[in-house]
Length: 94
Image (tube, rainbow, N blue to C red; front, side, top):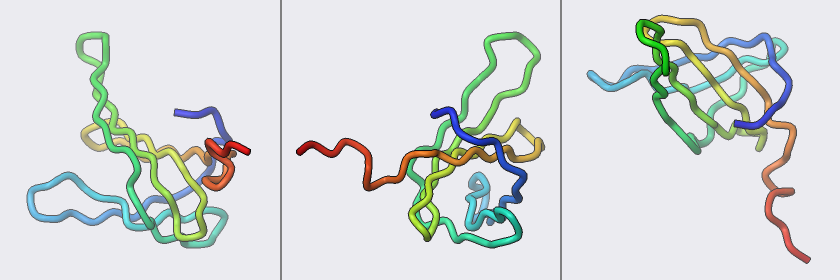
């Protein structure tokens, strides 16, 4: 995941049956942004025995901003990092 700015934020999630929680909104600076799309979703295990796994997601918000969400499993708090690149600036060729 990209290096960006670590933000104080809150992530709203919804559980769908027995499935993993799905983020539906991210609060940044007192404003709520709806999650438009989940671009990546992975659970990464620790290489050290006894350490928790981590869930990592990359999402696109309704304003086009992309953020990386990380959460230690099973009950850790979310960490949010804004991707400094805008989606329209990625992989453009003239």
